[in-house]
Length: 285
Image (cartoon, rainbow, N blue to C red; front, side, top):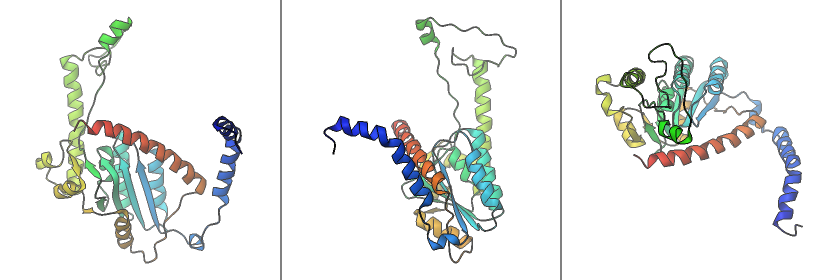
């Protein structure tokens, strides 16, 4: 049909939009099984990739909380963490959800830093045998671009009010007072993190060096330190939430097909980037 590779590439480019449109139509109008006619009673909510914004996950949690048909939630986590405020937002949303219905947090890959913070108030935390858990710590960093800027011939002009207004600037080395201010902020955030983990997991805050200090644990060591409750696969996590929710005939909620298609496409791209960058970081440990 195609004389050479260039003809095939040209044909693919000319017909790609049409093929994509037909694929979307197929997904939207694909017949559903009879079981889907019954209302779902269990739901899986995923936290995937770096946490930079919590709106999407918070919306899903809120819907699950208000849906009387949903009796329990599996919170599936595969994230290296991220920004502090959205991680805390998800943490408290899960806490509020648990007051209405049981929640199992499942570490399907990485449950570290902010994503562990987000999971601490679940009824139970179950981790895949090969998962990575922990990294209870806080980091603040910025490059020092002064020498590079001098070589390029770029300077800065600053007008400020307040001694610490320029703290964290990347254009020069921080002053001792600025570093002290940033260290205080980092320490305050770290102490909040450790305090919340200790409270949620029933751990001794005075022994935080055993489970915090940004230690990165295998699932086995995470269980030994009390960060998780059980080591098992996803099927076991599903069994546990079914039991806690007292559901006899589990029917899992499915997302809209079109939304699910694009979300899956996006998630795979994010996870590929995540695995690449995490792989680079892991050589440091």
